[in-house]
Image (cartoon, rainbow, N blue to C red; front, side, top):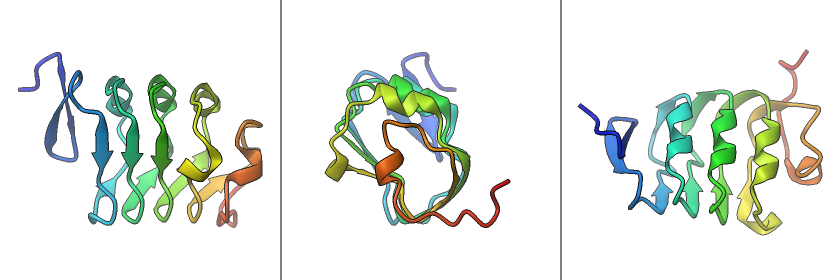
Length: 123
């Protein structure tokens, strides 16, 4: 059973207070990015690139206001990018969501650097 100060993601338990880095890149992760990721408010690095993640980016990602690096590239993420991503202040070279299936319109704060997207499944 997960305690209130813990979050279970992809079968692992993380401390809400102590987890500052979540680097699961190239780790064969599957499934979606759970909304509970937004509880890890002390994260400065979130790197989920090069996996087989599906589904949409949860709006709760906007709770991660201490993030300095966000890498979600090279997955199969779909849908629109939540506007809550604009709550994050991340330098362009520390942000990568390319090579997914994310649909326009993109939030204005990142529209110039969403990178290559497969938009063939977009409405």
